[in-house]
Length: 295
Image (cartoon, rainbow, N blue to C red; front, top):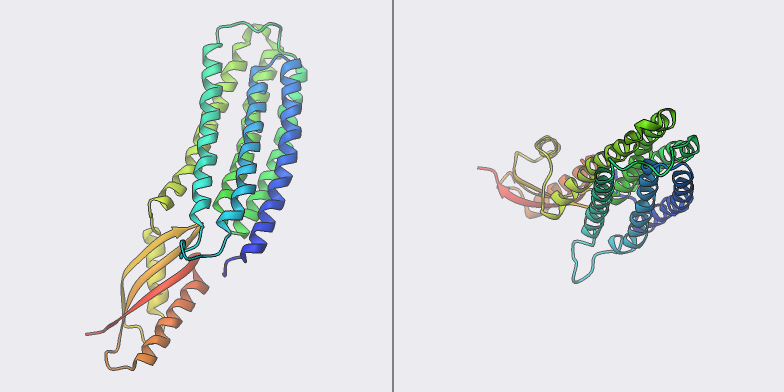
């Protein structure tokens, strides 16, 4: 499957992310109001999580312009790793929010609420679960379609907001039914922070691999080798090296061919190898083929 053209990729990325901006603004306002009126620290923590989504939304909107830029003299391989860098920043922002929420919840867990938690606090988490799960599904669909790691990361940021509202919902319900158990509200905030930390790590890990020149998995390398050996005229393939660029792979490999064939024929075989790999994947953006004589 060929990559989506940069202009269309940028348009779709911005469009779905702007939708997320407006939803996050509305949700943050609803959660803050519900958390304050309902005296729920877990719901206020959930509102802060929604606000953190705004930061990552704007990082995607601003960043897509740069990582979608074509190769130039200073960046002959393009600018796709800017996307990996922004993805790491999204993950770090999530981790920072999680640590802050968890610290506040733990340091205030013995402090009584100024007033009992009320049922009105349930409005924020309930609305969030519905809207953010829908936004996650739409965003991740677009992210996979345009092959954007940053957009997929932002989609998971949306889902983390939806899922983190579940413990907030439970915490508010328990605290509202049994005011003496107000510590459940704090425990819910801690659970939310741990979940956000897990999501942050899942977001950051593949992008760090890309920024440190991590390659394809063993399974994908074997798949690449199988495609190459299926090209007529290729007798062997070795020295298969890969690196990641914006969710795609750049492949460098050596093929062994009949040492008596003409340069023109060898070049035609190498071009066919390149076409086969880009067409059949796994998500290959570019291929460099080196010819060697088969002895």
